[in-house]
Image 1 (cartoon, rainbow, N blue to C red):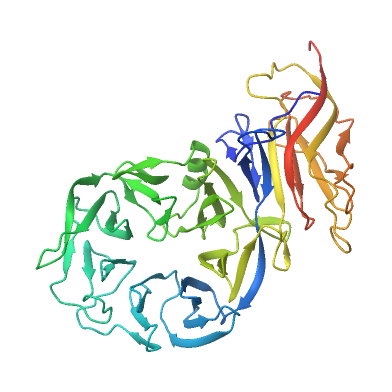
Image 2: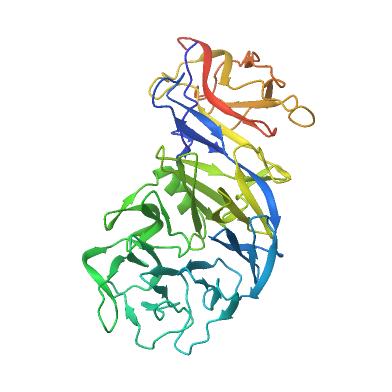
Length: 477
């Protein structure tokens, strides 16, 4: 039986007749040598509830010296390694927060208000210095907290090692372009300042009046459309870009400029959303995969870029029969595990590759792909006798849902516009490793003679897809 190209990333083109490769709650992993195939699809981590902290939503997480610091709604908590939460103070706002620490103090930027928690004295306080005019994003550079003032071109620093004190002269303007300052981030002891259509990079020159100086030549005409889309990953910076010609491309830093990492399909999806300026991003690493997770709250979509394989996939919750945005809102590495906070309530979860549900909700996975490899469809009718999914079987649980797990198959003969009814096949009860996920008598391709297959499932079991094989006959019609 010839192989059918089930492996790969998400790529749904403007026309599904060109490409209709959905990849939801699955991510590809390459096998460099000695594998059965060059790669496989692995189920994304489930959400294992570890704590409920406040009423939520979880607006920000920060890990320091064995404790997790949480902004839940308008409350600020310290959480121990045993997940005991203690209220430390009250913050303002409703949106995402930006946080940074100097080893002693944690700065919480709530746009516009700012707050400081002192690790050593256990004192929480609002920044009330008359020269503090608000902060959108905050970073730490050589003893200074650095932050951008809302609705301005202005970047400020606090006093050395004291986030509560601001000198009225300790500011500068990002004036390489007349655009407003959207966001900032500190990376490799350099300060990146993102405007609406440009970016410039500064460093600590040690000047007496103001220690930060623009790096000559470190200016590019790619800005940022969403202040909370900027994040560090894989020794670089990622962000959702904008410039004078348009917006909606995802970049990573390449030197002092931006290198496009989004595909046309991802950009088509992003630019179809009514609002993208509210996009939020976080990054994390798990088993060598480095992920940039980009969520669009208004659109209810979450896209993920995996640096390890240079590929995108979609993550989603599953509610009332529909895919919705992923529940994660922010991230911190804590207790040696990636932790994320819920965007609707006070729940904090661990990302767990051995958990196959999102807390109490099912996690549905889905993969769709063209039946024939690229360039091999001659538009002749074909009879599809059988499809076998090459996957790990015998993965059933001892009891309950998943004890006799199934995978569902649908197909489309018009390129992905309309779909057949579901056909179910077993994945094998516990230990049933000889089980075959197999479908027979799949009919003849009619209409456009362009078949797309789709497999999916909701059972809380391990999913590993290595490939698929298709038995078919062609005709001359």
